[in-house]
Amino acid sequence: MTTCLPKRALKALIPERFHQSVRLAGYRVAHYGTGRYCLCCNSRVRRFAPYGEAPRPEALCPVCGALERHRLVSLFLRRNMTRLMNPGPLLHVAPEPGIERQLRSLPGADYISTDLERPEVTTRSDITALPFAGESLGGLYCSHVLEHVADDRQAMEEFHRVLRPGGWAILQVPIGREETFEDPSIEDPALRRKLFGQCDHVRVYGRDFPDRLRGAGFSVTVTRPARAMPGGAAERLGVNTNEEVYLCAKAA
Ligand SMILES: [Zn+2]
Image (tube, rainbow, N blue to C red; front, side):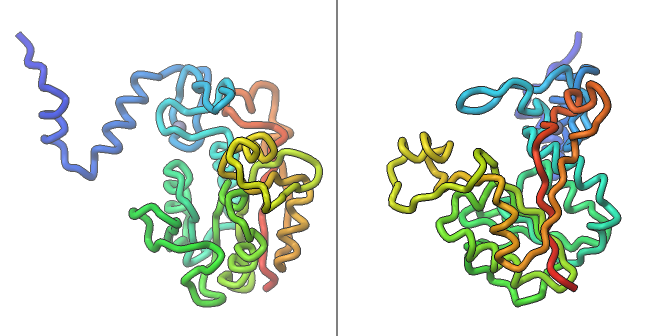
């Protein structure tokens, strides 16, 4: 006769700091397969799950919850390790778990995080008025936040201010058209969803996004990390071949 411990009792036996890894291990077993590989949690899974208001197929990692954009940045981080390593203080804005693990493991990174509301970050702050001294950080990562911020140019200038000369920032936003469109008078959530793509977005960025970053003082390198991948590789990794990564640098 076998004894089957209730889930709650089993959880009580395992120290709390291991709960997350035990949970991930369970998901890895449940979703194991050879069709897809998540770069954020290093899991082999059968497929990625649909996700989004209008569900996108093959979007969500069933183990760690990473989306296409997270896996693309993960690919970028792995390929550009030499350039990005040893940043010293590295700020992660509105941290996503899959990316947090990788930024924490970047050689020479002293990881800190910030968010407007979430309590579990290093320090809560508004990115248009960061509580850091000028030239005090070596790296910064902020993804899919600026489209929620009314004065995004001020946030970009803050990012530039807090970085040391030679420091880098990866600043990602959704791109929805050729030219950025914004209208601060539009406050109706339904109209914002229609025009900007989401009820809490205040603009929709266009392909001119790097110009706005350059206006804050950055030099910007635009790459498409998944563009030239061999047949089937992008699909297996669940990344978009057209999606861009914006690597910003402050002049040394
Ligand atoms: Zn994953």
